[in-house]
Length: 149
Image 1 (cartoon, rainbow, N blue to C red):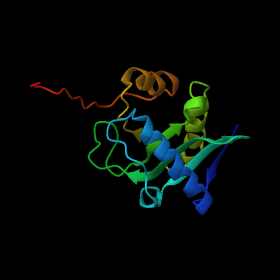
Image 2 (image 1 turned 90 degrees about the vertical axis):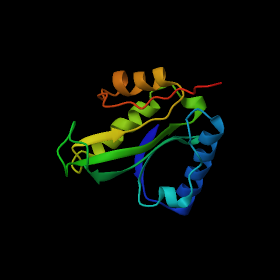
Image 3 (image 1 turned 180 degrees about the horizontal axis):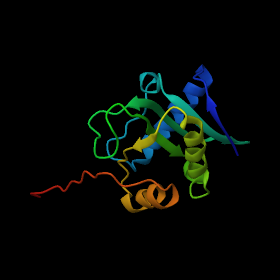
Image 4 (image 1 turned 60 degrees about the horizontal axis):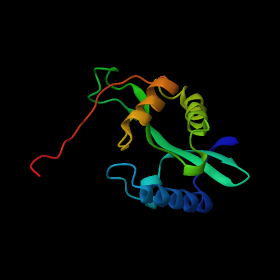
């Protein structure tokens, strides 16, 4: 498996749009819709691939903290992970963790924190991944329950 940061090219963009559509079809995240070119524009792109092609991607960008005082001072630079996707047949093999750690190493001179939100329908697995495997800290949660049926 090779990990690298990719420049946005027509070939990379096409593959990311295909993978995003595949992810949306899985319906394992609340409100996830396939990306458009505009969704990817201006993002940093980190990829993991092997002889079969791209097996995972991570998209994000460096931001300046606003209204995050409970974890960092105003204006602190942080990297917002917007998407981390591993193709289904390659999951639970350490690819997502390795790609995350690769991206973390690449952005550490530009950002003091990594931040992300998740809308996974498998909250136990995703929390295990981010908290236990990637050593992230829990910050907040937004929960829902449908009533009146």
